[in-house]
Amino acid sequence: MPRHVGLVAATAAGRGHAHRLAAAWPHARLVAAENVADALRAAWREYDAVVAFLATGAVVRILAPLLADKRTDPAVVVVDEAARHAVALLGGHAGGANALAAEVGALLDARPVVTTATDAVGLPGLDTLGWPVEGAVAAVSRAILDGEPVRLVADATWPLPALPEHVRVEIAPPPTTIPDATPAPTGGPATPTPAGGAATAGTGRSAEGWRILVTDRVVPLDGRTVVLRPPSLVAGIGSSRGVPAAEVTGLLRRALADAGLSPASLRCLASVDLKADEAGIRATADAYGVPLETWPAADLAAVDVPHPSEVVRAAVGTPSVAEAAALRGGGALLVPKTASAMATVAVARRAPRGRLALVGLGPGAADLRTPRAVAELRRAAVVVGLDQYLDQVRDLLRPGTRVLASGLGAEEARARAAVAEATAGHAVALVGSGDAGVYAMASPALEYADDRIDVIGVPGVTAGLAASALLGAPLGHDHVYLSLSDLHTPWEVIACRIAAAAEGDLVALLYNPRSRTRDWQLGAALETFAAHRPPDTPVGVVRNASRPGERVHLATLATLDPALVDMYSVVVVGSSQTRVVAGRMVTPRGYRWRS
Image (tube, rainbow, N blue to C red; front, side, top):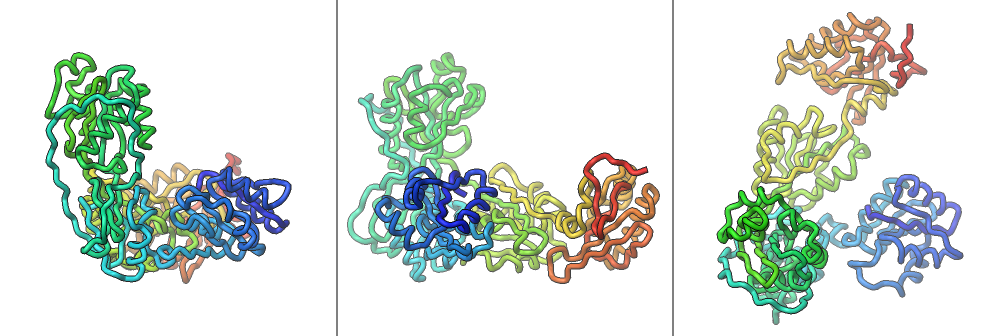
């Protein structure tokens, strides 16, 4: 979602729809003006995105004179009077209009209308990956859409989304020759090349066909090539106190240019924490549009560098600032420290980090699957999971997604496979039902994952929450989740936990309650609860919550027949305070103890 959304409406119905969005989005405001055209123009000027409850033609005529650049213009979504359609009019994927239309559709039960070619057929837009992009974006995107052969040549394996099979991926590691460490001359004020600036222009058309290059190097461009700039470069900066910003920016610009590196691939500047407030360094970071990371001198002193200095150690407590800061997060030094009168710069290349998203798909119904889960599935190039869960989401995956499916009982193998793919540099989604962290795949995966990959947790609606909603409000007070499966935990341990929950008068959600080979554990658990609670304590059983064949059964500790329960069920045992009100299971929030 964009940060601020302006809502514009002309009719009572439109204003009603707008108020629904404003109630759901704290960052959305209904824009008022003397007339709707003025309101629309004001929203265009003041907001990151606009949702207009107007006719599409009227919106086009009003906004046409204001169009400037799709990279900076607000996203615009148009909704009809009956809120049947949410049309992504301006901003497409790059500006966020397509995603905004989906969000509007979800809130208003409207159908998102997306005409961006890549989004319409499930392909990732080359300008939507969050990286600077240069070159023939439209032409190469069209070639991908038309099924023409395209080569993607990358310096390393980056966690890119899935691409169709006719995009052939090649990994060609870049040269790592380090130039001589000769200080750059001190120059006058210099303006840095902005992040995303154009690569060195080439002439003619490539003889190699359509290409996507993923590199931090300056390369010639032609009408058949797109260059994606990954965030691979870290510039270490050292300086004297009061260094002018122009000197730092000029030195960094020359260091990158001399090494043939693109400033668009800078991920951050780095320095010792004593320089955290150095205005010249901060201004340089702002000019390049990257953050400034600082480290304690002791941390930098532990980094092995090729050019340590005892003079620097005596001044700031570490024998290196620029080189050590550039290398602090790992990687290879491409530009050793080079100096001007008051500054030093070094540049290192960080290795890509794979991406592992732990995705909870919810209890089964598509409308209980979160938008974030859907986004992560479409962000992934590799999706790993239980075969029956993957069958639920295959229609959401992009063309070219590699699917690693396995059957029941292979949890450890799935976790290892997902981590291995992420460690190799890929964008991976490991899926499970409910929430990935509740009796699901997050725990085994994180046992194998190390700090070489980025891990993203995507919460999901658990089976327990879905069952609770169907029963009423049994989780209104303290509760506990317990699994009755003794495949991974000895029954003696499970029995102790059941007894503790019973003695503590906690509402209990029982997962894996009964199977063909484990047919006595549920009865034993109910007996333990019955020893501490009245026989009329409500017990709910929900089978296939939110799935076909959903069934809800309400009983008591004294009347529940365990034979009604199987592995597709969740059993909810009430506390001593849980009661049935109008056929619904309710646990009061307050401490109103009944006598």
